Image 1 (cartoon, rainbow, N blue to C red):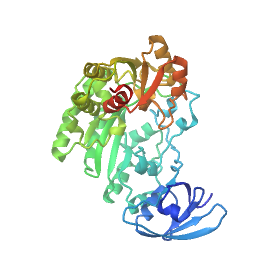
Image 2: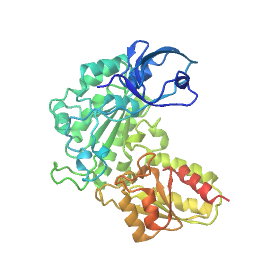
Image 3: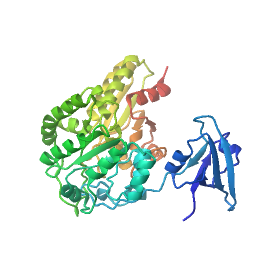
Image 4: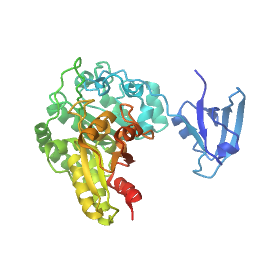
Length: 434
């Protein structure tokens, strides 16, 4: 294994470029401290005076002295760390429900506390070593995002398919004692970790507030590719209704006791049940937004701002693609936006043939589904695709169909917009502004 951290890029005009550091060099040490990954780099490069050891491509080692103003970046870019693999066999694992033939990276199951700290990935801590725990404490890797699912050890082992995992409450208490902030989640499996088990989990985790700063309950996701997997029950509309009636008062009670929201429910519960969303302020600083909690209330608030200042645009007929779950919200906004701008919109809700009818979010719509929907129902002057349907920065759907493929097959312009009301309006203003 090669030493140090491979330098992927150097910013023009930066301190690193002035020191003649180049892509392909390896960063070995900072102020005598060995550098293993991005976390070490961030931790040990915080001082204003640094001695940086660099191994050049030819094997020569340089010791470079650097001085900078407080907060000035060194200008070095690194690749994301290669994730540690997950050793669990969760009953509800979405990766196990993927069809064959997708890009290889989609089948990677990560279980890496570093990615939790750097990017907000949820981890179970089931394989966390004592050395890793020590590092989290020493380098103050906070916040962390932790999949709990159940605090009862036996049930948790069953859910994770790993009956040898350490007791999660002991780990959380150790992290809390070290001052680490944690955001937690429960993937709810009807008949398994709900009812009295969920009551215990909520009670245990709320008992660690404020170090356990939030808990999100999210419904399990089931695809049609489960033939050889455990039989699990979906979260239906009726179940979601009864669940929210039972648990929303608890969330309000905890928020009142703590003076801040703690217990959150994924948007999917409200969509399926028909129960109105709480006001946006009930989501606090949106700590679980990337977990599908508060996306629609945030969308509605942004929609109100856009509609308050939207101006007439040039005449156009626009088709907007979305998933089934967001259809009513998106379509309602587009009807109001049409009245303000004069643009005629058609909202195209897409079925998911890749994963099955139970998967309705826009982020898992395949390029083939967009193509088939557009060919069946037709496309107006331009087809707009929300960026959540695509791999970030690459214009590729989950099945490797590209936006260029769509444009060529449909013979219509295809454009991508940031998946918010303001993102959509910004694109329209650039494209059809007077």
